[in-house]
Length: 244
Image 1 (cartoon, rainbow, N blue to C red):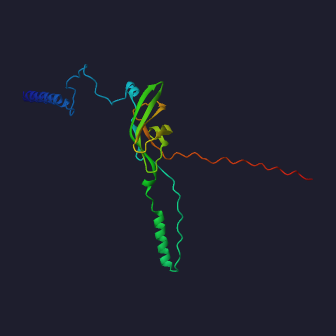
Image 2: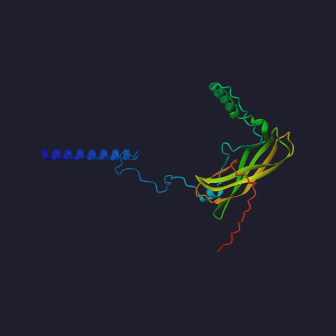
Image 3: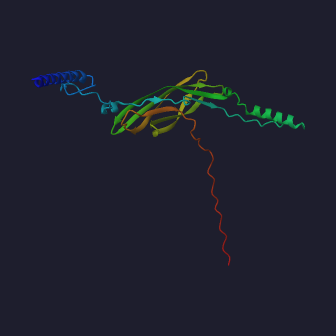
């Protein structure tokens, strides 16, 4: 009888322990700490968890890369060419130390840059940029517009001025499009600034697979100047007749 009583108490305790574990499982299953399979059933109508955002095809078709003006390309100045004066010849006094000091002062004065503000023909600046895009047939066609003004300088004379404006589209470090335009503007009044708007309508690049293109616009002073040297004529020398 004692054995049965002990067994009954043992079974009762085991049942109580199982009940407590089940309750703990139900309570812990909600917060993910302990899940023994006694938690709430998943709602089949509940929406799936959010996934990583992906760019839809409709968003890519509406995507138009932003246009940026890089540092140092928003201004463009032109100057008159002045004839450089030869360095004056210093008379030697015979004192090597004094002559060296005088030569150093002369070299420092020659190396000092002159005041360029008095030599400015005009100063052009970009005040705004914008763009328009169309996506079709696997290509992205852009129109990049540049607005700015031209301020005459002390050496300005009325006439036609030329500004080198570059437009470009890049994908990371890859250059998809780059073109420089020698844009001409007629300026007649030296007392006021002249407004201008330039538009590049021929920007065509492959359609992007993500919104990661970057467009640029600005002045480019690194354009090689057209050479004025005439090609040299080739001279043909007559071969001397062979003598026996």
